[in-house]
Length: 176
Image (cartoon, rainbow, N blue to C red; front, side, top):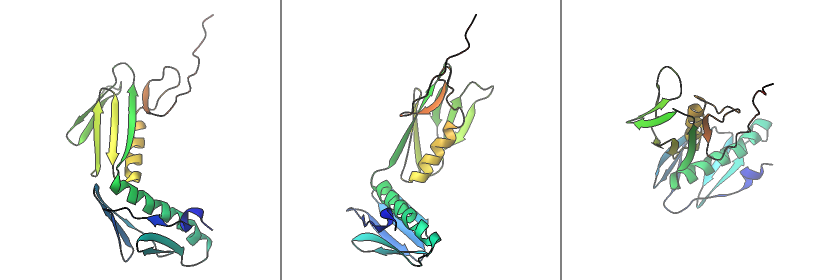
């Protein structure tokens, strides 16, 4: 039995949840999200969203809690957008937002340009980058892709890190 799947998901005021075939649509004050769900889990929408397993096999039970988490994240996202922050540390490292692109100077011989996907807003002041959007999955994957451009290194702490991330520092070479 899925502990997460058994729980009812409350629908706040101002948010509407509709199911059209296999497509679930969540509309809220901050935006609209749609997602395709398999028919292995039955989704009932009334005042609250409840999920139940269609067949009692391992695959259906594994999707039960996953789908409940996806629906809960969609409802939360259209009400209050998700936000991730990155900190760029290092001498000469710069970040800038120009139109729908993020421009970085990361110590390479060329500037790095990353297009910002639809549904995401990014701001960069000094070396703090804030990524905001209603889709939790899209915000997290885009932030991870940006962080992968220059991961933080353990000796000087240079690179791009999440704002709540702690970098374990290593001791450098000892001179004789």
